[in-house]
Picture 1 (cartoon, rainbow, N blue to C red):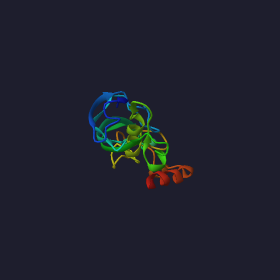
Picture 2 (picture 1 turned 120 degrees about the horizontal axis):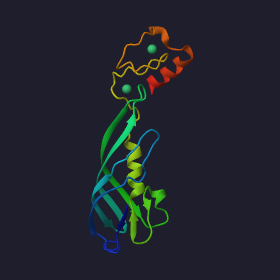
Picture 3 (picture 1 turned 90 degrees about the vertical axis):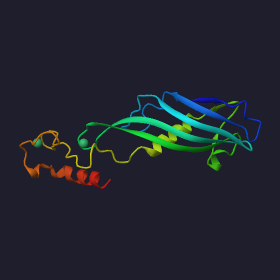
Picture 4 (picture 1 turned 120 degrees about the vertical axis):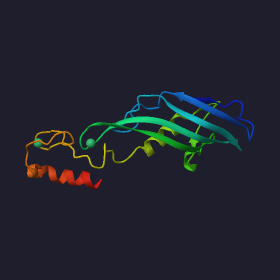
Length: 165
Ligand SMILES: [Zn+2]
Ligand SMILES: [Zn+2]
């Protein structure tokens, strides 16, 4: 997503509106997350003594899978974006995104914000009972005949690990 900044680049205090809808910078921003519909950003870009300040809202809808039952789940992000862009060479040391020329690419800034705000733990519901470790049945839908002590002892550590995370 590139913004033509020629109108504000040389004038401190100048600003412009951005209202954009389009393809996400990355279709799979993180492992297990897919964004297959357009995302949108609306806000302003202001020249503050040569630093370009982006301020607005990003909206995206993602799909993912529940880690217990593997059922499809999705969610929506509505994120306040506040990022600075600098044309100087020490931009990144100062926690700003670098830019060159008269086109400002805000894709990386948007993508970083998406990645940071995806949920750490994705479950279809807190009560999800997951899949039976013996027969693979979805325990939210059926009561399989396997006994309660069906958890393979070799798998137990892994279950505990997931419960903790
Ligand atoms: Zn689930
Ligand atoms: Zn079973």
